[in-house]
Length: 218
Image 1 (cartoon, rainbow, N blue to C red):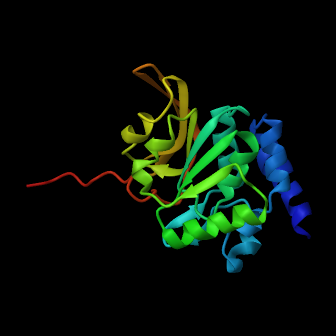
Image 2 (image 1 turned 180 degrees about the vertical axis):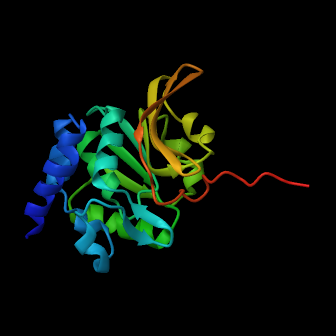
């Protein structure tokens, strides 16, 4: 099966049936070669309904959860988007099809360079990859309409939430509590923040820097 057929099957079976109504998002996932954003020895897994190992303890989350998460962010063509933990650049590539500008953060310098190369090879010129600490975001380029963290997190969102625009900025991520995970939408209106659970999700790990610190015990 060629990759174009695999992409169509992925969208038809994993994305469209799961309340992903953003046609631009569907089109981006149909067109972008997902296999180009994973290691060569994992390309056979690019369109399988599972998380794909990338490097160390990092994964590209399955297409269903990624699509539902981005769909919930309701990204507009004029939006400035911050992508935390872009890996080899797949999330940034998809988001760039939906938004005006994407600032993607990756703290692994080698991986960030490869993500930059992948985006350039595909002619994506409205996304830039910054080699920065994931937990710090990129406040100098903000504030952002939307922040996407397509990974599991336990805590440490406060510095990123403060980088949202005050006029209904949105942050989407997967909040993990023990073995339970929920995709979650955070919103900002002035100095007030809202939080809404979207759907159950079980990411394979926690993004570095966002794991809950062990409590001190006597």
